[in-house]
Length: 232
Ligand SMILES: O=P(O)(O)O[C@H]1O[C@H](CO)[C@@H](O)[C@H]1O
Ligand SMILES: O=c1cc[nH]c(=O)[nH]1
Image: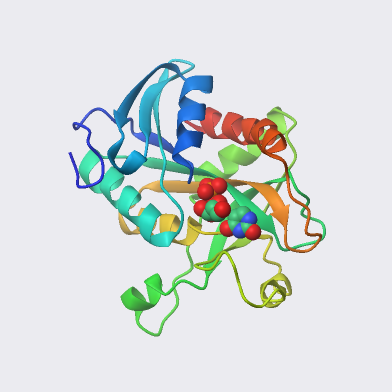
C-alpha cells in the first residue's frame, strides 16, 4: 500500500490506463474489462484491475492537474512496478483544424507548469511520448480506421485563464490542444525509464468555443479507450 493507493503489491497490472476523472475509470472498468476488481477508493480516486482480451490491465483515476497525476504516477511506478502508463483524457482545441471529438496523440507536452524548473533549474527538459507506444497507437488507429492527429500539446496549470487570447501564443507555434497532466506524466515516466503515452479527445475548442455534450464525450471516448486497450 502507498500513501494514496490502498492496494497490495500485485493488485495492479503492469499496464495502467489513466483518466483524470475517477468515474471515467469506473466506466472504463465496467464497460470494457472482464472481471474488474476495485483495488482503490482512497479519496474517491477509483482504481480497478481486470482483463482485456486475456491481458491484465488496470485503470486508475489521477485527478486533475500536474500535482495530482504526479502523486499517482510516482506511486504506481515506484510502489507497484507499473511499466506502461496510458493517459486517456479530454482536451481543449487550440487550432481551427482540431475539431471537437477529434483524437490527439501527444508526441510531446510543452507546459506553463514550473515542475521541471525545480529539477533542471534554468534549463529545459522536453517531455516526450514513448516512441514504441506512440507508433503502436498510430498503427492501431489506422487498423481500426480511427482518424487521429499527433503533435505537441500544452499541459497547463490554469483552466480558467484571465486572458481569453492566452492560447494564441502557443497556437502560433503549432500546439494542438490544452490539458493539464501530460508534461508531468512524460517527465516522471522518463525519470523511471517506463513507457508513457497520452491519448486525448477534444471536448471543447478555445478557437470556435464549441463544446461536446456528455453523450458525445462518451461515444468518442470509446474510440480513445479502444486504442488505449489495444496498446496493452
Ligand atoms: O478529462 P481529464 O482526463 O480530466 O483531462 C482534462 O480535463 C480536466 C479539466 O476539465 C483536466 O484534468 C484536463 O487535463
Ligand atoms: O484542460 C482542459 C481540458 C479540456 N478543455 C480545456 O479547455 N482545458
